[in-house]
Length: 138
Ligand code: 5GP
Ligand code: ZN
Image 1 (cartoon, rainbow, N blue to C red):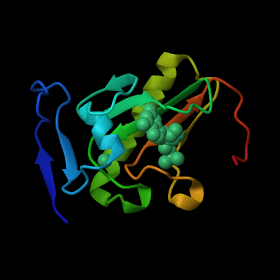
Image 2 (image 1 turned 90 degrees about the vertical axis):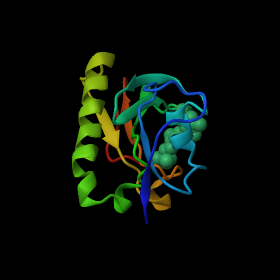
Image 3 (image 1 turned 60 degrees about the vertical axis):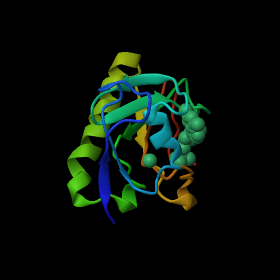
Image 4 (image 1 turned 90 degrees about the horizontal axis):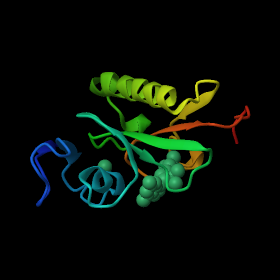
């Protein structure tokens, strides 16, 4: 496997979306396209390492997805070198939760593999809140 550091899509202004590290051959990845602005999304937050947007099919009043700009397939494909990035995604979720006023109770979730409902194979942390959340989850 080799990763390459992609610069910018045609027409993007320098620095607009930063860099996207992705596995060459992953040009069909839905979430890489969202990061690049090639597919529209409702952006909530962005920095050099992460992109956060509203889930298209929300399961709670607040339901956003925190994704690393680096293309990682899922949690089971993550490597030890991704540890800091994945921890950072959790802290971004906590910041969004604070800003959205849902600190009474919220949940951050990775669905890992099709058996747990993972349907998009670019790792994404769900942040759900704004309603009572039952346990155990379905
Ligand atoms: P998963 O099922 O893989 O854990 O989560 C994928 C999530 O991505 C789902 O909650 C789904 O609603 C959301 N999703 C799928 N396609 C799109 C899209 O094109 N735009 C947005 N904003 N969310 C999407
Ligand atoms: Zn991707």
